[in-house]
Image 1 (cartoon, rainbow, N blue to C red):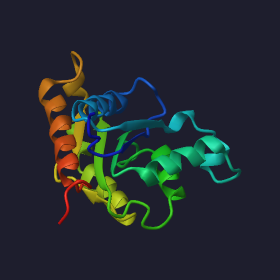
Image 2: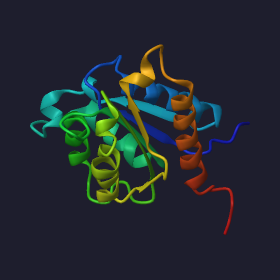
Image 3: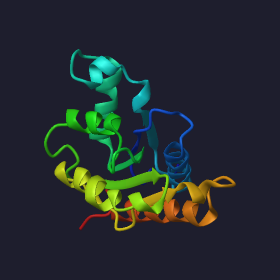
Image 4: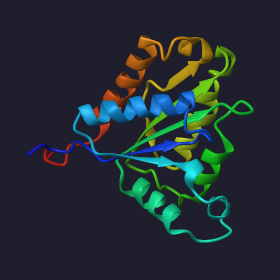
Length: 178
């Protein structure tokens, strides 16, 4: 029987199901599967807006939050809007309780038009993870339009793989006693 390395929640903060950030999130999902790590994708755009805004309770949103709570690895992807991650992602993270990501490993993935927005990874996304207690991988992923001219650039895909590999390595193995 295969051993599950860790449970991962992959959060798509893009309003589009075919965005570049979603493409990279799918690459992360495939890498996790290759490492025998159970992963669940949460598409925030498919959740009810009223529930995301805290105006009403919704079972689908509650399941998404429970998925994040149960995960050891949180991979979140978003296009850059106004020099940071999407409002959709921010709204979801605002619903998480204080320290909801404590003892979890975060993998930030951002996409933007040019390299000019690359600092959003370190100035916005990493602090978001840290504010909820997560440890971020040392290698976040930022991609710009030029890296998608003929589909995603191979070096970019390898960067996603390395970030996922690092996240899996940072999650303690429950079978090992220390």
